[in-house]
Image (tube, rainbow, N blue to C red; front, side, top):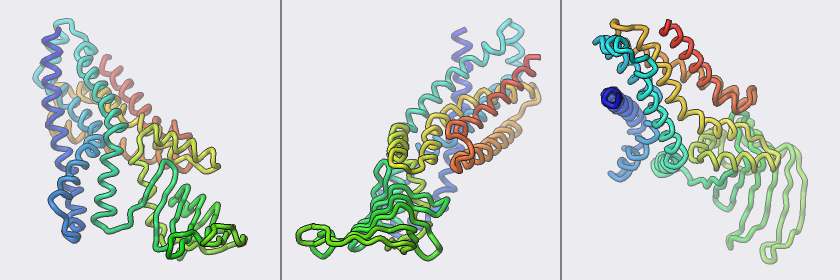
Amino acid sequence: MKKLDLFLLKYFINILSLSVAAFVGIYLLIDFFEKVDDFIEHHATATDYFVFFGNSIPFIISQILPLAILTTMVLTLGGLSRTNEITAMRACGISLWRIVKPLMAFTIVLSFCLLLLNEFALPWNNKQLNSLLKVKLKGKQQVQLTHSEIWYRSKNKIINIALAKPQTAQLQGVTVLFFDDTQRIEKRLDADLASYDGTGWLAPNLTERKFDCKTGDLLQTNEFTNKILQIDRDLESFSEHSNFNNELNFQQLAAMANKLEREGYDSTRQRVDMHNRISTPFTCLVMGFLGVPFALQRGRNSNIALGIGLSLGIGVLYFILQSLVTAFGYANAVPPFIAAWTTNFIFLLTGIWLLLNVNK
């Protein structure tokens, strides 16, 4: 039986390697041509290109690995069925589960490897990519992101934002510090909420504090309503910053969500992304399992073109459904855990149902 396992694994790994290489190559080629104008316009160096490719590949692998596993499972079992090798194994008394077991075991290993990649490597890779594409190539000002806040400097101001919610055009927990020429604080603005009205950020309630630049003593406190905040950034800028959750791993997202909740802010988006860090790697296992009945139902009629087309169709359907459920999660229409795991659960049930029909 060990020889059978090695034969199946070798066959599976060879096809998986080709599938991953093909998907990564296509993805990277399309992504690069979308961004090549920025590289040329800003006179990118050879190091910039290496940084882009080196940090893009791990991210791309994490995105396409479930689809590659599905394609590989369909092509592996479909190819063995087409050459009657599955039939020969079944005739020797080897069960379908025994044939699939080493492939599923290897898929579980890949799921855990992807989990480790998402937790330890991808946050750093994404940070390097964001720095290259947003700051160095596009010349945008560096924004410092802590676990729960956005910090940036603009002329004589330092702006701190506890939470940016571009989907609702709102900023929560905004503080603007003004400094004089000697870098001493002279004024502070605080707003619990600011909404973008198309031209600027309007704070329903604003507190202004003025300080003595020499002694630091508080001189005056004023309260305003419906006051425009002096933030020189539009809604699109914070839409980009909302994607910086990809620089955080599961533990950092959990800490960020907990802190936001303690401070009274909405942490739904962070909770959804946190659960996605765990659910996404196990999509590999679900796709591998789903590929078994799809491959065996075709039997000797299986072919490469059909297998690839079927895999791509399932992958597109999965992506659409996952994006839809995640959007519901971000909108707080469903709990974060449900938003992260629903699509995997649906596809797993579909695979079980199809596999039961194959056995019959």
